[in-house]
Length: 182
Ligand code: 5GP
Ligand code: MG
Ligand code: MG
Image 1 (cartoon, rainbow, N blue to C red):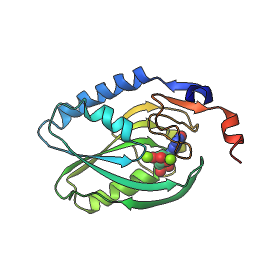
Image 2: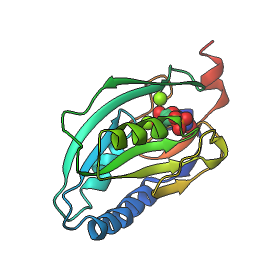
Image 3: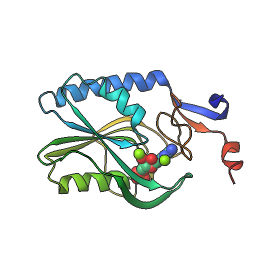
Image 4: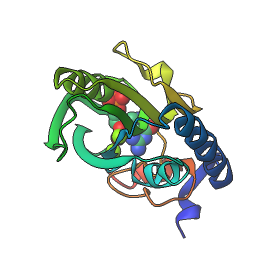
């Protein structure tokens, strides 16, 4: 049913699983004895967070944050707002932020500066998707799943007005889906 609304699949379920396994192995080696705090940025990173963390064969802890920069639709407001903070203190800890996508970079710049200000020992960023053409601030992820062109993507956590997060792949919606909106 949802498949009918998709114009094109950019990253398949198999590719996402394989890449998550690869990134999980890298993080296993890097964080072997560090007990990092893995921070999922809700809601978009939920599917990737689940896929990635089960591939990390080391002690980790998990926590969750909600921030918002998009207010529905397909364009960014430019402002980042904290909606739900961490429950865990980050002071002296190695932090791994897990994100669905970096576009302008504003969300991750805000989060990284916040956690460093709270005296985290280190803050690294893992993102499922990077859209480097969208960048307006100077920030890069440390680990990137897929580098994709500047198009509006849905699936594997990425939403269009809160829908399509449950697609098992990353794709682009048919034009008519946006047209029936307005
Ligand atoms: P940034 O702050 O880097 O511009 O983007 C942060 C948030 O914007 C992402 O976590 C994501 O929620 C949303 N976003 C950016 N690009 C896309 C996209 O192509 N599709 C969807 N669904 N959300 C996006
Ligand atoms: Mg996000
Ligand atoms: Mg969104």
